[in-house]
Amino acid sequence: MHSNDAQLLVLTALAGGPLHGYAINTAIEDLTGARLGPGSLYGALARLEARHLIEPVAGRSDARDRQRTVRITAAGRETLRAELEQMARVAQVGLRALGVAPA
Image (tube, rainbow, N blue to C red):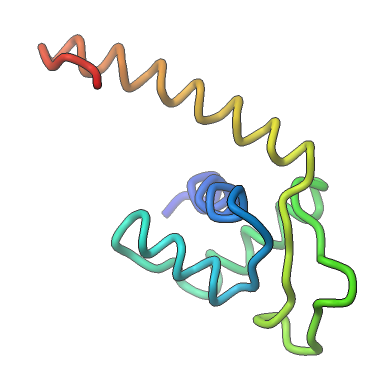
């Protein structure tokens, strides 16, 4: 999976509220039918945090990274919204080109 795809999946999972790593991956599995590998998941988390699109939840962290709870930031919500809107436009054009009526 491409790193941008993993980041988009993580932001989507976090749009519903704060989660820790295992719960994020469970939400991604529910959405896509597949789990991210540890490198993809924790790499995406690190990149998103470096870009200030997610942040740790104060007082809800554990020494083990997998139990560290994170949440999406306002900038993360805006980034997710813009990405999803762009994906929706691409999907509509692609479906029309295939002769399928967009939902």
